[in-house]
Image (cartoon, rainbow, N blue to C red):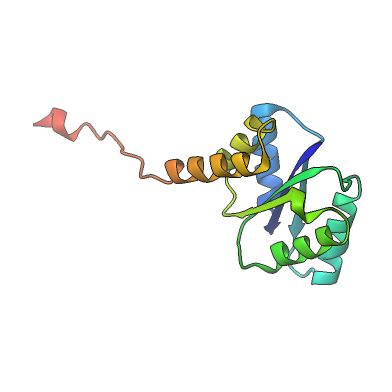
Length: 139
C-alpha cells in the first residue's frame, strides 16, 4: 500500500487533509500529524509513531511537509527510520493541494515518477492570477 503522510506546523496538515477529502473523498491511506503550539518534539514524535503504526516495511510512503528545514519533517523522518524501509519513502517540502491531488492521481506510478509529477504541478501552480478588471472596456 502507498500512504500519503502530511506533516506540518499548526493545523496546515489538518486543513490540507480536509481539502483533499473534499476532492477525492476520505481515504485511509492519507495520514496527518500536526506539530501544535506548545508541543515538544518528544510528544510530536509520539504522535508520528502512532500515525505510522499501521504502516509496514512493505508500504511506500510519500511524506509531504510544510518546510524542508523544519523540526517536524526531521522528527518524522527519524520516526520513520525506526519503523519502515526508508528506501520506500520520499519526502517533499512545500506541500500544497495541487501536489497532494497529484500524489493521489499518480498512486500507481513509481515513487520517483509520482514525486516528479508533484514537483512539476507545484511549479505550474505557483503563478499570478490575472484579474480582469474590465478597465479596457471603459476606454
